[in-house]
Amino acid sequence: MSAQLYEYVVIIPDKDDAECVRCLLSQSRPALRSIPTNLCLQVNRRVAVRQEHLVGVKKLFADGVMTSGGAYLDGPITTESTPSFKGSVVTMLAESKEQVKEIMMKDVYSSNDVWDWEKAQIFNFACAVRKAKE
Image (tube, rainbow, N blue to C red):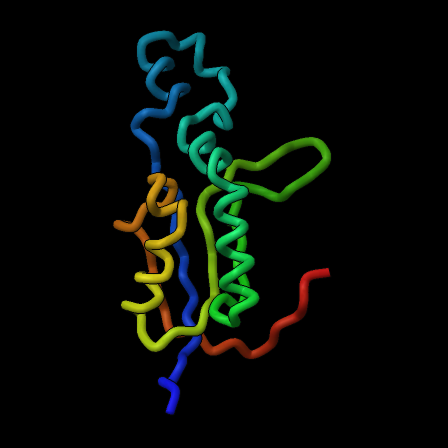
């Protein structure tokens, strides 16, 4: 007999990186505050392992573990601007919150210090409606 699976939603912000190039440099040189925030090392870390992350996500989705997932942003995506990544939101099926965290900790975003586990939230989730992405 297989274990009972429950659906969970995971909201996990990216780390506020103390090593952000723009933040560090602008403390001593105010003129450097104009450096775009997307030059932050945190964003570079996320982008550097994104393809490997997506391979793992696609496997979890194909295996029926992940039911949806994506990044949350600091604004809408438009032709005029590229918003900054703020974190990830995932829905998945698991036996417990502990199993959810165990699965998520295997992701390269965890092992490469993209996600801030101290601020992560995992909730039981009861999806009322779901539409496939077009």
